[in-house]
Image 1 (cartoon, rainbow, N blue to C red):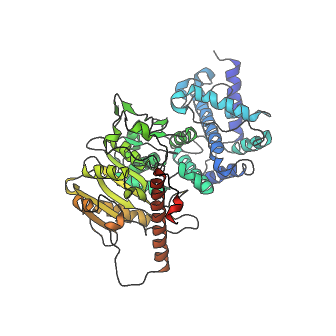
Image 2: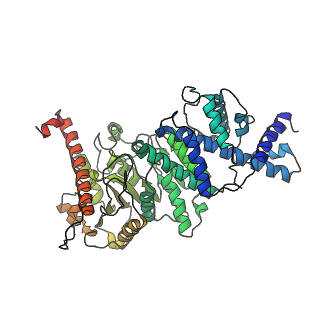
Image 3: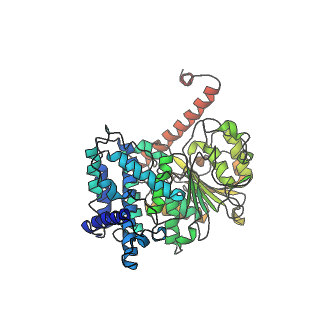
Length: 524
């Protein structure tokens, strides 16, 4: 039996669909449309917080338009049976009565509260996938977002239909990535908490080379960029990305950011994944009995040199992560992430790619002991130095550590060092890796051979003779070709040296603090 509420609900959505026909949107058109929505927030919301408002609205509009599209299709199939058209099996997501986009659009006051009510109702009926996806932005704060401002935003989004017919998932996914980068560019420093430049992401994924049927895990997944790139990598290799469905896992400490990761995957057309919200180091979400779940590929760009990360509990860690060399220091969680990722890598197939600050390669004390242990167990395959100022929020030169649970026979007892510090394009505010730089780095790792000025293969005895210090210049000497350096080369060398000095000073300050001394004694 079809009740009046069900019929009215469809009639409103159907009328809206007729008013805004699903004209296909090109990627540039969609990017422009989304960018315009963000522009409407200027003056009301801090730029760093744009994503907390624009993404939920965009996702709400998308799933509402898709629901209406699905409803119309089911209605046509059933000769106008509204009850049949409302069946859950006809819809990707359930949307309760009164919670469609057009229901909120019809409101003229207290629009923020109407949005919150709709968001929570949708999350409640889709708990397995959409829990917490809309975040907890201050929609009801009328000082920031008066009804007039929200009406403008909603009317802007209402000008186009975002159904699957108008915007296929791959196009929508690309536009979502564009908007994430746009917000990252605008907020810069804060962006480092949730966004890794896509060129760096591609490098890590291409090195790990995930295959059909393999499991992939990012313990610091941010907005899910690494996991999306895994899917794109499988596509580029001619594989079927659907074979990864149900085999993609991530964990993110910030609830709103974990919601963005879920949106990212869903808008790319991926339905079956598991993104957990919690502190990975303190409360890892994926485990089987007394052991952490183990994956084929473990990949991450965790927060650099995280402080107060839970080192006290690490000494009695129930998952045994501290067995890999001990407990990292309170002021630097970098090797705790490495320990967690190794423990989460499957025996035999498990491989790890992790971004670290270069200071983690040479700092001594507890970190030096962990480094020595992991090197002696022959897990480290490659150390790749990157150029300075590639990442949001820091000018430091980072590095990539590649580890394997079982290295190829011809690589056992050896580590490849790559000096990629000069491979970048200088930008006004931030440097970038270009395709030719990525090709050079990837080819160098795959070749695993000496290359003057670029790469060197060291034995574990070589590294032992350097007290297990992984600082790249100890192994890769610059080429002396007798030519004078260009200004560009000199600036690059200066940036690298400056970044290294900051790392060294930060490490010294931590050591001084242990003795109750002020950093001023360094310059006294």
